Length: 226
Image 1: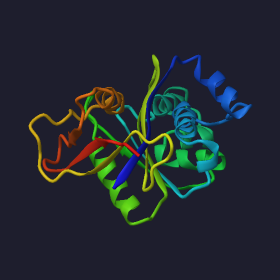
Image 2: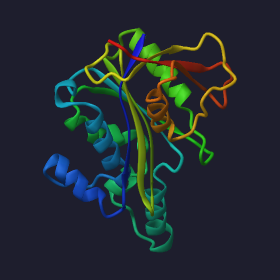
Image 3: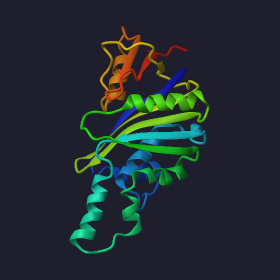
Image 4: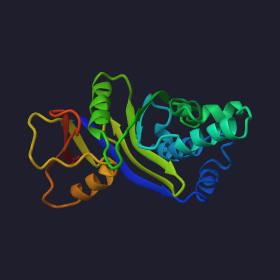
């Protein structure tokens, strides 16, 4: 059994992100891409301080990825004819974001980025299935799953914090689905928000999520009652 200890959404306007980072860290996160800063804010919001040292994995997907950072670097090289600074190039590599997150989340041992190619379609079921395997095998004490996008309009992210043991904040538990229901929830970026909404309804018992790309890859959530 895998437990859902936190689920939430985060949104920032472009000019709000630096101030939010300073409010949490007490300082600016210099030379870190906005997407990395955004990921750090979400990871710290998912985990209270007493859980940040536990063995942790981060699985995150993104439709846009580091598009703004890549565009800025290409303009500098192709239009202006200059050479990008090393940190400008590193900002285009989403897999390296964990290196700047780890000092503030000392338990972070692994991170994987999953690029998406279709707007409005996610693959939470893949992230949850992988997280479930790792937690069942005791490879990590907790796994953070996220969908993060940053563009000119601002940043939007959705998060799930999963663990092999329930915390005081536990909202639900989930297991791989034995059978596929016809009313499975759509696998979209805002799935965590819709999951919280459904879990808050009195009639909610089992809520199923099915992968859009891999039929029969599905998980089923049940409201947790300690």
